Length: 295
Ligand SMILES: [Zn+2]
Ligand SMILES: [Zn+2]
Image 1 (tube, helix red, strand yellow):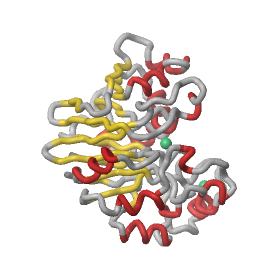
Image 2: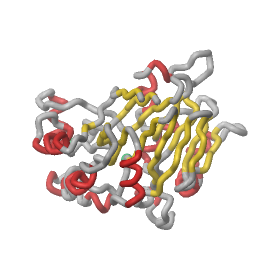
Image 3: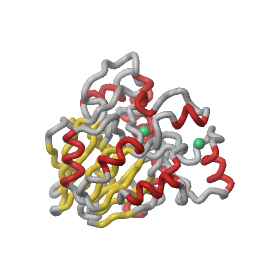
């Protein structure tokens, strides 16, 4: 399996266009020991030919251009065989709307996530201009599906919540957020970029795979409040803070493990922070744009 991180930041990116927090300022001015990061999106392939995207960020066009294996090989073509969505938050699927240009697409998502995108959304009709332009394939938590010969995905239910823009339109259910276990050639990858709390199935998945990506949105619960850039605690945004998840994650048995979907306020972005040192001693790393893993 070939894994390429196209973007490792949470919604907004790093730096975020309207954020003047110390970290966003520092990375803009070059005074911080940290790399800029675009919004979360990961490409995977089992054969180096066909590719699947895990989430489709608003920065998808530049992310595709940044990685030649995703470039077209004919006048109208894409090696992207499908897009898998972890949930319906805008930073995870707005990129779909940038993949118009009459290109047939296959999107894998739970029924709840599909309905949130297709219903209540006139702009979605740009992906429904002709029959078969956008094919939806249903993910069901607990079931394994074949993406292509030799590559399977198992969706795993994750505690989450409806996306903000649908808060009063959709009921709270158990299919708002999923994680993935992808398997190919005897190797496996666990992908949990949005997790409100650690459950037994998530822990089991982290013990069973070769590589894991996990929600690194916030370091602490009150990070946004203390910096004066928001009024919500991380739990209210359905993200378990790293400070809280780390003791359990340190015991996970997978060999390579990375935090991803990192908010620009999270001090683990700084190469020389104490928080980075604590995740390093727990044998976790911080994903960055351009990171590649070959299994
Ligand atoms: Zn997000
Ligand atoms: Zn910021």
